[in-house]
Image 1 (cartoon, rainbow, N blue to C red):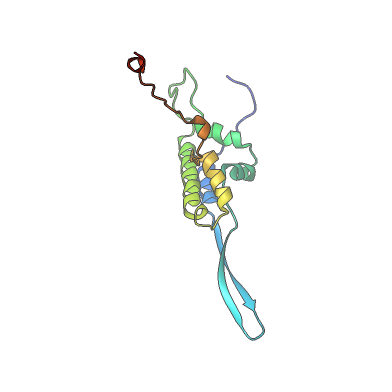
Image 2 (tube, one colour):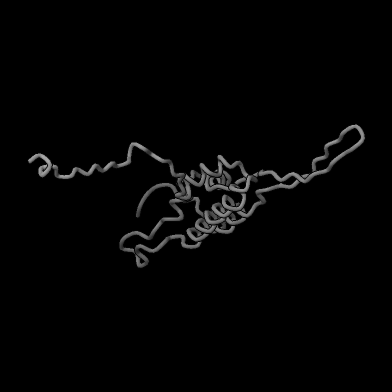
Length: 153
């Protein structure tokens, strides 16, 4: 039997991670601007929270890597469930949480409700989206050389 510290995993984390990722991201508040003889009230929307696996890990007191270990853990060789996920419900919950996070980037990041630079950076590092830059140094130039032997006779 392997040694080591007992896991802190708790099945309640399946529901907790989904609640964490379903928190309100954009808050609406009224802002009043007053002039000498006038006032104007507007509704301001601003990002107040962006859920992350790192944030959830900190909330429950474990390392981010632990969240991924729990989500990917499999039964060991020789076990009757060998190779199957140890915590399939948690693995599914993490996948759903990440899908929610990606959805928030699409819904709010590229509309200006979240800082577009941070949304772009997140999309590049976590969603596999990349900007395309033209790189002239990689262009291939083909020069055709016609046989001029007939011209020199």
